[in-house]
Length: 286
Image (cartoon, rainbow, N blue to C red; front, top):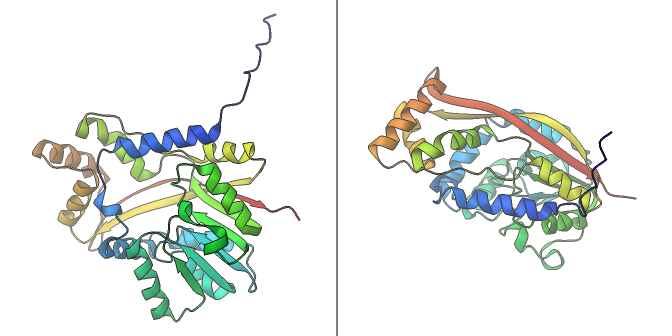
């Protein structure tokens, strides 16, 4: 009988693994994606328009799965233009929205005004920059971070989320490479001669929490992603910016890749795909 191997002398530090994967991910694209500059109003408006249609079912599922009460205070980390905060507002007492992008914050306040919502307060900072004692008003019944876990030191960020909550913490993060990241993985070697590195996923997140002594509930959800455009020309221009396409050869590579993904729905040009989203949550002791 073969001898049982000795266990490793120590468990890997999953926070360091997360950090290494996040830094490698940020470095692998070699350029700033202008379509994700959330200080720009036009990018925020584009995101807001798409989120009100393509993410409608996700938002409804997310809200339906939260233990809401009219007396609850909610902290929304990475709130964007109010994708979750706006539909949550009538269901709770108040919401504090954390959002660093100026374009997103401006649009959130504009949306609040149009919808007559007065119980959302926005703090224009990254979560890493938040000083709970100075920026936050005590603890919140629910802390939620949906598709916003891009912090390098995730352990520190999670500890601050846990401390900010008196009842529940809900995180939504990718379990596998989402549709748009699979596009990067497919295209990057031929477009730019290098390897694209995806960011850390929910497996890493779970292990960081486990090493913190937090044993969360985990549920897998389907996440659909759609890109909709009025013309094929508009669609090609968007993806050429997204993938830093500049030369005729790169345009040919991208156009060939996109061709079988395109479908026409009425007057719109559509490209879509799905992935798996992890809902990770825990209830505070007591």
